Image (cartoon, helix red, strand yellow):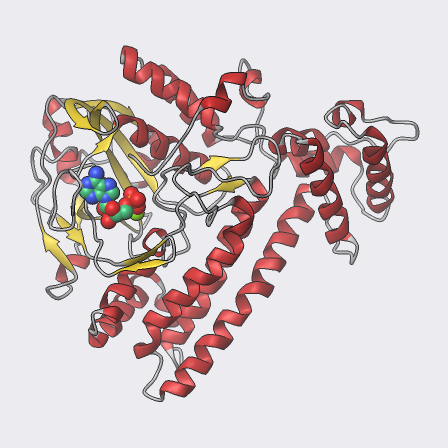
Length: 495
Ligand code: AMP
Ligand code: MG
């Protein structure tokens, strides 16, 4: 384990040509203090956390001091936001400090979010408030715990600095890590500003550092598109299976590595509601839960368009190849989703009727507003014994006869499987979480942090969500229904 001064950096992004980024230093916050360190990520970075909160060390993480290996920069990108193209976005409140090289675990971007003004801040103040920082910190780790690819965070730093939103709040910083923060929108930036050589340069960069296995492909650009289609289909299938709504699936929030990124007004389903809109600023429901798979395809089409200059000099052939790559999305998504739902139902074999069994269960859950996470966790205990009424599960429904009919079909379906009840329960418990980050849980941690500087709930949730498939003593309430006050929580893009 290294002290922060001993970290090694190799800043490959900073060696890209002018116009890919702006060199800019972070602007420190007043009276920074460490709120939470994620030891799992520290281990990944091979970083000793024992004295990370000491002022001398903290200074390197909050922009007060620069490690000699850091070369801070703000990345440039564009993006389709709510369907409309914005030609220049970029890191308006984030700064890439550098790329940490580890001995065992590869290379990791170390990025501060909430680090002050950059040339891309537009009308913003370059800051992130404590509330949104806590949400991203906890949710990215929750997603990782669920086995869903995501950016992660090393730590969260609070401050006394006032930041103005609808009301006065406190500024905070998140130290975000990912192998890369390149987005679909990064490619779009160069494509739409007619810098097609830079599209190719970015493609070379992404392949060299993140998809080296594609370097020798006949058409590396096409091979990358195919890979990104695949990873995005898989990621979104995982979101749907776990009941996660991202909230702002703009192309600038879509990672070319297929990572879930930029956590804003996200939400996990409570009662199953296909049209659930977690973002109160999303008036049209563009990013409603059940729209996410389609939006994935829209975003990939934007990405494909931006890649066109790198797909070959014959434009018609390039368009045809891109279309074909995109056509794969629907079948890949369907296959990943079917596989994930079969696992949630404890089915090892594939059967033609499985989709109907899943859809009928979901349909009944939607009608009866059954809690998504609780239902699947209880389904793990499903008994196929003669006369078993599975009442814990049955009691979740209003239409109990309909549930009984579904349960009879499910029982019949399970008869063709090899696992017994106990074996199936154990397999199912490893894919149906007991805990997800419901909005009220994050909100409770936020209120304690804001009003009393009490960060204990953040720590509790962090360790709970890092291991969401194991029931933990004293945490039963987190596995239950949300309290009534949860209905008043409203999350929007303001962060
Ligand atoms: P987001 O909705 O957080 O993904 O941000 C969309 C774009 O707005 C990105 O370019 C952000 O960097 C920028 N942005 C969001 N909030 C701020 C802020 N407070 N100050 C400056 N830029 C911001
Ligand atoms: Mg963003």
